[in-house]
Length: 595
Ligand SMILES: Cc1cc2nc3c(=O)[nH]c(=O)nc-3n(C[C@H](O)[C@H](O)[C@H](O)COP(=O)(O)OP(=O)(O)OC[C@H]3O[C@@H](n4cnc5c(N)ncnc54)[C@H](O)[C@@H]3O)c2cc1C
Image (cartoon, rainbow, N blue to C red; front, side):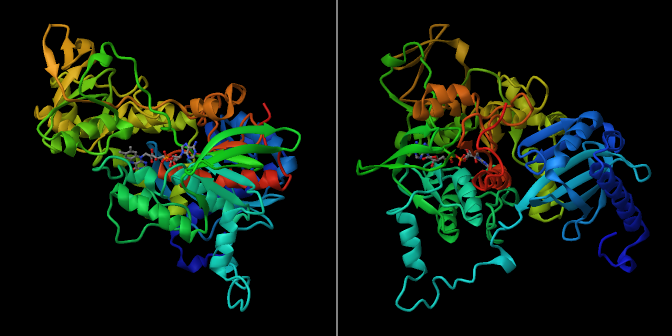
């Protein structure tokens, strides 16, 4: 029962703890004996196990008691996991409702031959308990622990170093890369790049970020004027350094951009701004990349890093569709990527093509600047209120457990559970958002909640778009302040605007294409060539294992990794990606996925 004083526990606590402790004990015995039958008997027939790097050095989902038992027994001889016990430093075991089922949920710790791990188990019953959900994660590699808290650096190397380099001298030398190569080159310094660089720094891996923008944080600053984050602050912290307590719930883009700059400095991240990654090739013999970057003055440097992490955004190359007659249009044409605000078009008329987040936000911004705006819908779309509906998916972060514990809970679900969870949430969201949905439909808006009723969250995971988190534009459409037009009513674009099939012309001075971006595989193709792009395959979306395609894990191309996602995903998965890179560097695993 660990080191908790039983005198402070009530009867309920004791019963919950004893169910968990006895399950963990039986689990350890069965695992130690690699007894597949005994392992299988500890899981529900419809049980799920997700391993984040601890047993499989991969992000691996398993479904069903037999598969889980086989996976565990297969890994155990080399991993040698042991010491499974309730973690006294985390939220105590408790009863909870998860995906409609009553569970006992407990955080546990364990060790492997090479590392220390964390996990979560959800049991369905107190007696003869079997696990329904099970998560194992690698926390750290023994001998390579992060320099945090009691392990913080002494600072001797640069403090009171009379006659020698001080901290700033060392930082300047470190980021100049005059006489050395980075081990890891990170392409892109948004939240994905900063997250992985901060984590690698803690593992003593020499890392350089390059970003083509002039200032750290510009990836957010340069977005449109009115942007604020859609998720509440408590889900959005970067690794190691939470946002200040007095910050607003919904962080405005410039505030976030400035934080990124501050964060890079505070985390001693080596960062070259105004530097574009232009070309890369992998040297199989030397096991490193030849990676060329170009600075804004035109000078180039070719680095020889062992790893390249693409953190260059899933929205890198704007997609511009071939629209009939668009060349004839005499007004301004912009992709939403280049739209900042509508002040230059006050009193004029605008068309906005696309009903995703960007389309709606651009339309709302134009409207707020006194522009007569029409939004054009091509396919159907999901619309969700930011509050109360969208925030439901992050409700766990408001339950009380610390951020790290919530991150474990958020990482537990395998694909079938993710789908089921979102289906349950969507049922509730549709109810909560009934008035908006009905109002939009009455205006002719084509509304959907995804083919399997998983709503915006699965659209985000599958294709990174196709939905709108309502920041107020839906109300403007419903009230007729912003007009809605269906794309199939347009015959062609003409000099003055859009000619409709009924012969009328919708006049416009500005046409904004909020038509999305090419997938990241296209960035790989353009920067690393067809062969690597084909070898790696689809990036983002759901892969055959039910995990995010090529994200945060080894790929088919040695030394090539991908980081992307929401602020929460970047915080969570940067840890596992950094540990994998460290494991490659330490010769524990190969640098490419074995198929
Ligand atoms: C309106 C809106 C609201 C949002 N709200 C939230 C929210 O509340 N919570 C949340 O988690 N997410 C939110 N997001 C989504 C998400 O966080 C972002 O899209 C995020 O920017 C992704 O981060 P990233 O680091 O992967 O990519 P990016 O921010 O796109 O950064 C990529 C970087 O790579 C650089 N780059 C690209 N190619 C190269 C190259 N060849 N060489 C050098 N540099 C290169 C770019 O300059 C850029 O700085 C929101 C997005 C929008 C538009």
